[in-house]
Length: 505
Image 1 (cartoon, rainbow, N blue to C red):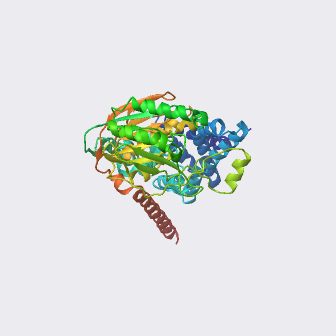
Image 2 (cartoon, rainbow, N blue to C red; image 1 turned 45 degrees about the horizontal axis):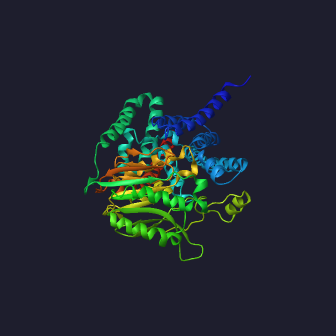
Image 3 (cartoon, rainbow, N blue to C red; image 1 turned 90 degrees about the vertical axis):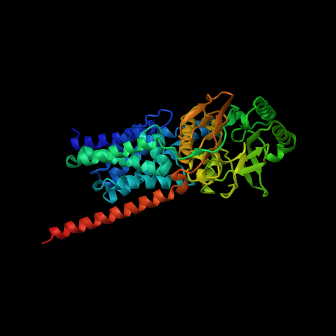
């Protein structure tokens, strides 16, 4: 007969795994946002009264449940478009999930080691600091499935323009920790319940605040979604047809002030299309009184310099080169090991050069704007660098790499966070979807259907002013959490020594 304590332990391990799956369901396209605090409640409770290795195990299986479902699109990218076989793609996806699952386990390790079960503020601090390390500092950052993204439709979204993704993520984790404490501490339930209600009610009130304001007349914008499959995009025989498609769709919308093409819509280097295609297109844009934002790879001055770029055509010519590159997609970290492994598996990936952090803002439709290319919209600090000068944000993306998976929906949700953080419209032009106009409050104004050739036309308002987050970014939140963590640790140590002295005769 199996001992009951052992069964209870196994049940808690299983519930940690289930909580990881539920956590992912809080994000797009499922959007069950209130599952996020519930999942964290289960996880945090499972760490209490657990040994170090058991808590680490539960953190790890939470990660397996969360990332195993949430980033399953990695397999699509590697297998369908990276050219890897099923075994190789499955192995690499499993390794990817297994690696990122280490971070909830790392949070569990720190939480149990410092006795976080005795202080409800410690666990949320640790959780968000580990999220920050994962999202910003390691491997150029992988800020996917950050808790705050799941809260765009809940009262906690009111904190986003003030504290950003990590500060809001702390309030989410704090809410979960407080809910656990309410269930366990009968004498403190009224106080804890009042505090929890205050956090959520204040967030609801903050959602009604307009942090930015209109600074000009509406701009008519058209975004072209070419819907060219990734396995066809770079074939030389398809290049001319691709250029003619975008040219035709552009000419049908010359009545717009601004026309935007998605990431690498032009499947050729700038030098290859400048004379016969871009120069005439630039003249046509000037004659029609419109501006164009197009994307293509750009050759640098060195033999191995290749940039993922955006250029503006029309009233002003400008150029932006992507700086925050995607690890293992646009550059290869851990060389030469990673390159050797992928070469053995016959997987070919890009090798781009960072464009540099200090690039002037591009200007179109009479206003400067912040440019991000694909993965760059996942980083809050990157998208506030041009404020308050920028009147709107533009993100060009090619999520065709991930097919009809969770990724395009999750990526759109991330872009919505950037609009809310900055209090500006975000124009998102993609190859296969999701092309969208996102309002300053993070809501979707209009959305083009996935996997259809479409042109999304909408009017936006240029915005001025600054949200508090745009003024200070992530650093004050992270520094503040570190300080709170250190103060609480010092207080716990002092309380322990005081208790020891009183118990000593």
